[in-house]
Image (cartoon, rainbow, N blue to C red):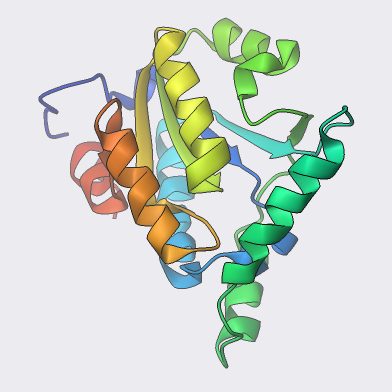
Length: 194
């Protein structure tokens, strides 16, 4: 295994958090092939090294801001990519990943869920590797909170995605100023799984 000059990327100390990886969400992202390719590797690495994977699915919470939140989300959908002739094959490949059903949370910050916070704490892991959807909201907020909760934090760029390509790159740029943003090729080097 190659030494990483920075935060702790040792598989023995890592937990993978997979956010919002449902078929409905997958259908909305712009980088389907990249996500599938990256997740195939990450799933293989998790099996090889016994890295726990925690799947999380955010549900919209009921609050005085529910209609506002729903309206803002609807505005995002304006940026949806046009359907591709490859979409049916991507959907098949996504289903073939066999991703586990997520623990439901009602906030973009996964640490606001006592169950999730307890699972992460009790794992004894010191590093959280984020994957899934949506880069500019759930991934961004939870990655920043992960750092604030004293975890080494990695965001795997090609294992995350969102509706808008522009928003995706802006979010990764902002994240890279605070946490480690890497891609699956970096993980291949450090975790030596091909």
